[in-house]
Image (tube, rainbow, N blue to C red):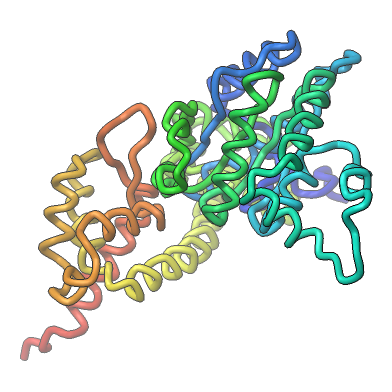
Length: 394
């Protein structure tokens, strides 16, 4: 009978909390400071905009924040959380439904308003545009609730929100924050920062930016080793080193490695993993990663951005960062003329950012690779393509 029992604790790609949340102490500390201020009845200084490439753990941090609120705040004025995704917020009525805790608020507010064929969504959309007294009633209700129970509202995939609804939500947050503890947390891909500048809310630039990047080597090792150790599975530092390197400190790949190692150890009833097991797992990881990368490469090809992506990937083989101006030069030199005629270089750059091929963290003006090994994959595939098209030497 195997000594390794239970379900695999690793969670690649699910957004669930991993068995050990490593390397996010700084982000957790910043959120804890905000929660402490809200518990004291004070509103945070600004909304939180959290962004980074997919698979970095943004959704994990949102779930951690919900757990943290539920775990630490038990006072009468306890903080409450509410969370949504953009497909749940298609109109003002749905926005208010997630913000207000009283489920009967709509019926109370609509007393005397309902008639045959009444459509609440149309009603609220019209009232919001009119800036009618209805909006003031809703705002006052939310402010009153937040004074009693501060609210943290989390919106994942915020970069996909409709601009009109995003503008409405940002306006609500600003008005409530002026009078009561309220925090809006927007999480999304690197394109989120630019998207928010397009929705017409001038105060959005004052939001606090939090870039979610790759972990360092020690945090990567801890994220793999500690859960394995808890299940009686050991791996020494020299055996672990190539795993840490191969993961590139990317949270999604870290969880892939952990999941595969745990499965193999359970299958073979191993309490110690050696380089032989690492090599066996590496093949499986490479296959999954290649499928993941090929989908992204195909997307770049569909967008006619593959030649520019190849040139950028070649650049990043020799450097870790580069400037916006240099990236624009590369894009201009590697796109069809008709593509540049319909879209500006800046628009193409934003598309590469939106698809997470490149990004720049909030604390830097320099750009870096979204996932370095994705760039290597794109470059390798291009070299294979060139070789396939070259005439065979006789």
